[in-house]
Length: 133
Image (cartoon, rainbow, N blue to C red; front, side, top):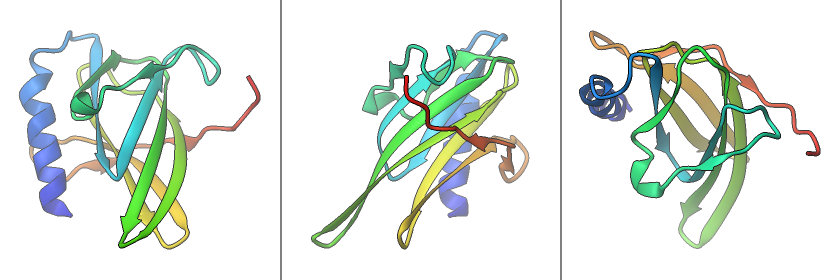
């Protein structure tokens, strides 16, 4: 697992210099099939992330972000589909990893801050309240 983190951090940090200083970078890792990002609230406009861009999503820093992820875990002929919604506030100029994993009968998501000189650090994120929009 540490190797995956190292690779994701390396990819993010090589691209931080190309982002505007007021922006933050997100990378999605794990069993992610579809991802959407919003900075206009839970019910606000969502931007669907192109599957080729899951390792580099630019968002406005110091502004709350909602991430919506659909993950499909495949094990032989069985498939388990889950959706995860998280919200947090990324700091401008920093890079983050949204990691999705599937443990028996439960989808798990965590947000990690990429750290150039070490292991990623967990970031406080909350599971978004599902509301009718």
